[in-house]
Amino acid sequence: MSINATLIIQMLVFFAVIWITMKYIWPVILGAMQEREQKIADGLAAGDRAEKELQRAKAKVDTLIIEAKEQAGQIKDQANQVANKVKDQAKSDALAEKERQLAAAAAEIEQQANRAREQLRQQVAALAVAGTEKLISKEVDAKKHAQLLDELIAEI
Amino acid sequence: MASGENSGSAGDYISHHLVNNTQELVEGSSFWTINADSVFYTILLAVIYLLFFRSVAKKATAGVPSKTQNFVEMILGFINTQVNDVFTGSSKLVAPMALSIFIWVWLMNFMDLLPIDLVPWLGTLVGIEYMKIVPSTDLNIVFGMSFGVMLLVFYYSFTVKKPTVLGYLKEFVTHPFAANGWLGKILLAGPNLFLNLVETLAKPVSLSLRLFGNMYAGELIFILIAVLTVNYTFSDFFTAGGIMVSVMQFILAFVWAVFHILIITLQAYIFMMLSVVYMNMAHETHEDH
Image 1: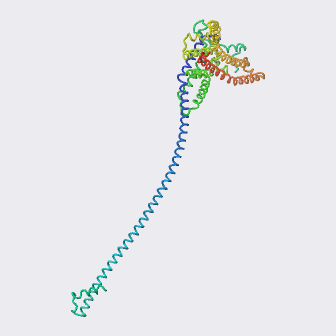
Image 2 (image 1 turned 45 degrees about the horizontal axis):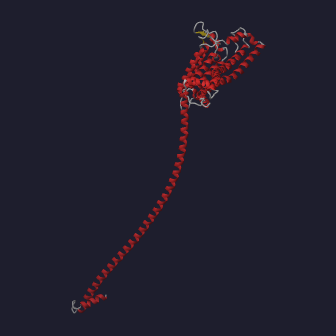
Image 3 (image 1 turned 180 degrees about the vertical axis):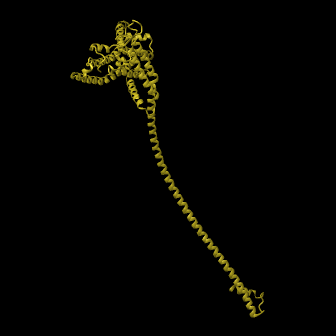
């Protein structure tokens, strides 16, 4: 139980142990611990951020849906309006066409009737002339009695 | 705990267990001898500590830790918190020092829990006559560590405060009693110097003797418990009294060992914390006096 060289050896070993711990053990393990802490903190922060972003995205989606619905309504209204317009247009066009065709047909009929009437009149006139000729035979000079004939034709 | 090997008196048994196995380095010199058992076990335990922690450090990952890594991280985290609470400066040295002291001293103290005659008995099988297996019951070991701590404290106070040697000596004679006049300064220099010398010496002495005393006393109690049946022959264990003493010895040794688990941890912790406190005191400046 006396102080001897063991003390010096122990002191040297003590320094060596501390030096090795300081150099090769403590920083390595503590570094790993701090890195893990950092990772966990980052992970939690990222989770929070993602949560917030999700909220924001949800809100954005909601507004987008509302906007889209509004736009769809507008488009539907516009389409209805256009359709109505087109329908009205078509209706009026058809009516106009009908009128036109009716008018054209009427005009045609009129024309045909006039033409027929004219032909009839001429034929009647000719018949009358021929009949008269036969009745009064040669007495009637077409030239002399032209005025008379015309009057006759007009009367028919 | 009983030993059939030693059939001498109880006194012989006790003193036998309190003697180190010494080897003289220089013939006839009492200082240049080493306590071979202490040196062997202290280095063995240091190597065990370093290899274990180094193997964990090598495999240390920031991902999911293994159970071993988790265990080591628990110790490190605990010590790191303690050091950060006590030590106000910033130093790469203090926390590793605390870890080394805690684990190493704990391992040294733990040797106390091994059956007292087991390892020495194994030693006799390979031709070693006697040894003391608890290094922290050797004054040389505890003083070696506490002087080591004090040298680190001096080293630290020199590197951190960067005082000149003169300034350091000046602190010795102007604190704790300060005076304004030159006469007062001279008068107080003597008491200051005395107090500071006592304080400086008391630190390592109290640090090491506290550990030594606790471990030595604990070891002694184990020895005393072992003495109960030291002179028993094999047949003695089967007499009525022999059975009773044996059972009593077993219970006593068991209870003391359980209690000792607390003591060895507490003493290792105290040694560590006081070392950190001394380092912190070195860090503090006295300029506010």
